[in-house]
Amino acid sequence: MKSLFLIPMAASLFLPLSGQTKDATKAPVDIELLRKSAVEIDRHIAAFYKAKKLSVPEVTDDATFLRRAFLVAIGRIPTAEEALAFIEIEDAAKRDELVGYLMGSQGYSSHMTNWAFDLLRLRDGRQGSQATNEPYRNWIRKAMDENMPWDKFVTSLVASSGNGWDPETASVGYYTIDRGMPLDNLSNTMRIFLGSRMECAQCHDDPFGKTERKDFYHLAAFTNGQYQQNEQYMRDLWREYQNDQKNRGEEYRVAQLFWDRIYGMSLSGGGKGLIELPSDYQYRDADPGENVGAKTPFGKTVRMSDKKAEGDGREQFADWIVTRTGEQFPAVMANRMWQRIMGKGIYEPVDDYIESKKTVHPELMTHLAKLMHDLDYDLRAFQHVLMLTRTFQFATNPNASVVEGGDDFHGRKIARLSSEQIWDSLITLSSGDPDKKPVRTADNRIFVGGNPVLVGQMDMIQLSNDVLALESEEQVRNYFNDFLAMVKSGSGKKGKEDASMSMGMAPVRKYDKDSPVRASELPSPAPREHFLYLFGASDREVVEGASKEPNVGQVLSMMNGYVQRQFVGNSGAHVYKSLEGAGSEGEKIRRIYLAILNRPPTEEEMGWMKEEVKARGEVGYRNIVASLVMSSEFLFLQ
Image (tube, rainbow, N blue to C red; front, side, top):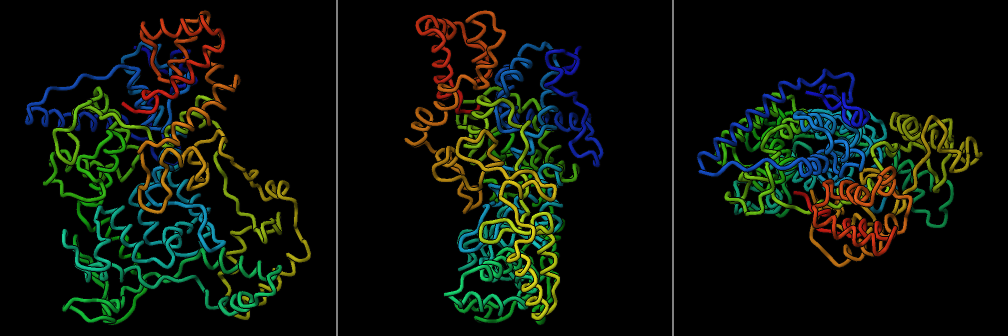
């Protein structure tokens, strides 16, 4: 049996299933262990079929598997070359080889980055402030690139503290992005990481659940007491410039830089473990304004003093989430990943936890939670296991699930692609493999009044570390005056283009609505006029706020917008380059189908398309491209 990497046509496309990850510092994944885990999952599914008296679904064909695997694993369709290589290979192991290729690719981390941005409501900027979430964005991206274990990822977010510009502590963006809304942040934390919906308990006892309002405030005490690091030393200086409405010159702009982009992006106060009940608290078990100490409502109890404030509440809270909630923490993430790979959660919604023993398949859910733990919360390895299962390969099931509120494991349901999957697939067709392009880089330059200053001498990481280390108002004022003098003198100033090359930084990339880069590289959230927004990309105001609902704008965008500009009117589009070397009109049509729908045309379709080419010549190929891209088959995942 030939392996994909021994076949000349695929040599540059598919890598051997070596188990090596992108992070060379980590031990290679044991592929045989992943295969055995996949077989164990299939055994659980087979037992479910037997118990429910369901027939075993057929395995899908190569073309459907190819497209499904690419879109699920890396969020885009294969390039014309990748599709042609896979379809033409005769190798019983090629599906496993393809999964290994995808899970080790840059496309995987790009797709996971989109998922993480949506889950964490990542927005580039902040309303009413010059603070930016760019360092936090870069921290998330690096975590996905390096496949940071999920338990470490969550701990780094929930227990975070420090300088928002420092790459080691930029995870504080998890809290500073919600500055002024700590209770909403807590609600999202419980929902995202533990599948516990507690938002109603902010105001009243939950009539549909077990959470009382006091329980919510016991939890809120863990993270209470967040403030900007050493802000007291800058507060009076900032107010002086803020109150001087007539003087909004260089001094004001530098003061705003310090207040918004340094102090405003920092986080201090490790969590008091103590909080006052609100003035409208309405239950007999406590009085308004009464202090309550931190206490967890389920799992292994963690309790802090209700008499005095401590300083490590966030660390204790993070440890409780990750290590003291039993199977809940790994089970919630296992179900999220099952939904991501299989198309539907074992139970839904995935952010409303159900104990494994109460799910439709208790044994499978228990096994998946244990697998997540045994794999040390390696999300790449966990998803790799799921994609190696026979269950992942089952043909599409057009019928409704026989299980209410969850998956019946009887074949993937047809679903429209996400806006990011559509966009990333379109740029694959227009520009080739988008994962070979450089990713968006961090811009740590110091900006005053929209212009970079002190380029080549200092960046925001150094400046923020210096400022946050100051230990008195006098030190802050002295440093401020010295820095202001340097800015006014023009020391280190350069033009915007020259500045981007200084201090080892790559040029700052400017993106417009047609920039052929992956969605994970574009502004977050997408501008309202952008293709992504029209197709339902999240506005990042709420957790997982994306939509797949159709609208007229989508139709117009496909007919008169990006598709027309980049395909019909662009003879240099990559999809046409794939036709080079095709010896006949039939072979050209076949390659167009493989590039767009990732399958060969049927005999009937080939006849129709040949008639189009015969009637319209070269324009006919462009018409075929336009019609296939706008088809339901392109926009939906089977």
